[in-house]
Image (cartoon, rainbow, N blue to C red; front, top):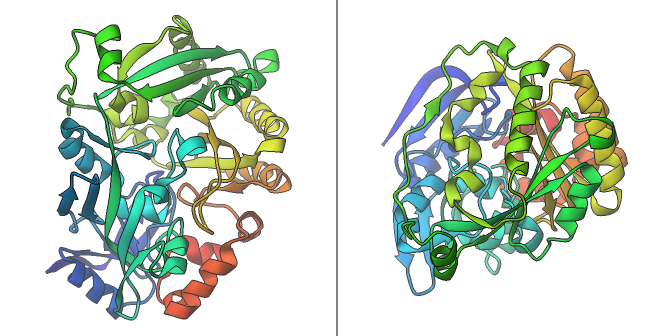
Length: 451
């Protein structure tokens, strides 16, 4: 069974830029997904639409995985969960967090599908210690363009398994996957907030906190001079029952998650997001976070891991033209110098994101995984006529430093920038050639970058 949009509809990623026309197919079973894949070219899979750019838009057809939303089985003894590809992280946490299970690796939003999380090899605030999403994946079933369904793991079809991690859906369509869950004692995190007066201090804090499971820095992108890159560094661990009893004895161990959210209206006047309003927001945010540093406190996992999920359709705040999320990673030995240069240019330009983050990363899981050992900086920019030339300048800094851009966030990098940053590209191209995916699985991103 399947539904479809005949003739194509306008699709975009979470950044609402770019927009492209594509036939949208919505199979309800793995067999239906396989049949759609077999019958079409210029096709790619799409999960919850949370890739920011054009990675999940087929040049001709797009196959939604949201109908593949069944949870198949849980082995509680080994904490192994098998779900279909359209199940979201939010779905899993809603069912299994009250039972004492979490996901060891989560990105900045819980509204992503498991298929999408694998295809982007998403990473979280613990990548420096625990790696990306691929590290918790035992196996998955992949529908190939020729109709064959294969099981991939580290011991079975291992090259295909590795190429699919971060391969942005260009090796086949993920149908289901088996993941390893993380047992937890409470729904709380023990958070420690530290204040960093500039970028060097923020990196010093992160480097001195490598033993912390989770770490992330919020950066004030408008700060300049001696305060360039001033930050709030948030360190956290899953709270034990003893932690909860000491720091929050009146709190429930697993409180019910609130589902009501604020919502951004459509249309939203983009002019409200200007340099003055962002400066006020950043100042208030910094002062609030700096008010009680160094005192451990309990925070629920939802606002710590997924702060923007509390605002429905927050992507609308950048207006009708949309926005570009820019995420780069810079190798460890060059990170301070290059990130300082990037932040200096951004602060002078004055229209950066109201929520920018800096994280430590370790090595990637596969040839196309984004992470490398270093620091990743993430910022949002509203689309404007002058933006793309500015981002090209930032790209040049990243390339010169041996860094790269995250494909799940990309909407506009050049083929030269991309190829310089991903030396594992040849492995993905070989796999695509062997399976016939190179001529059949084509997204707007892959066409733009020549994958």
